[in-house]
Picture 1 (spheres, rainbow, N blue to C red):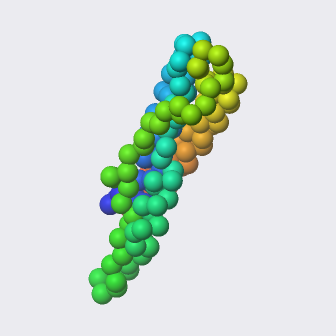
Picture 2 (picture 1 turned 90 degrees about the vertical axis):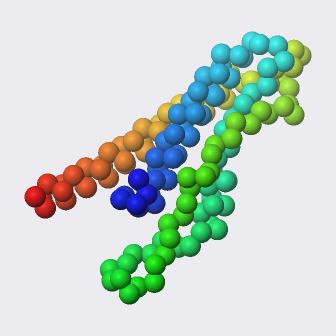
Amino acid sequence: MKGLFGPDVSILSKEMDVCLLRQQIYAHNIANVDTPHYKRKFVSFEEDLRQALEGEDIPMKCTDPRHIQGTYASIENIQPRVVEQDETTLRNDGNNVDIDYEMVQAEKNSLRYQAMATFLSKTFGRYNIVVRNIT
């Protein structure tokens, strides 16, 4: 999507994929809240994305072929990492899942996904208006 819709839509799409993975991880943690020696997992992504975006050229809008061509930040190679938090223990059986924390994080993640989906829908709606007015 990068070429047609720009970096914002590409990043947003990637973030939505990460939200889906996070929801699976939160559900997995909640399902294993009573499993002895289970260690909670979480998704690491935003820091890697920030570093990639800072290391790339600033996107430039070109209205003339003689303008300097800038490149958008490439995020295709950045993948979310599932990390196990094994340095803590909340109970005597070695489990470190806090059900309240996981439920709150799952709800925050759900709201974040919904906000991104709404923004993406409105963005494509604007493109649709432009396309309809051209024809």
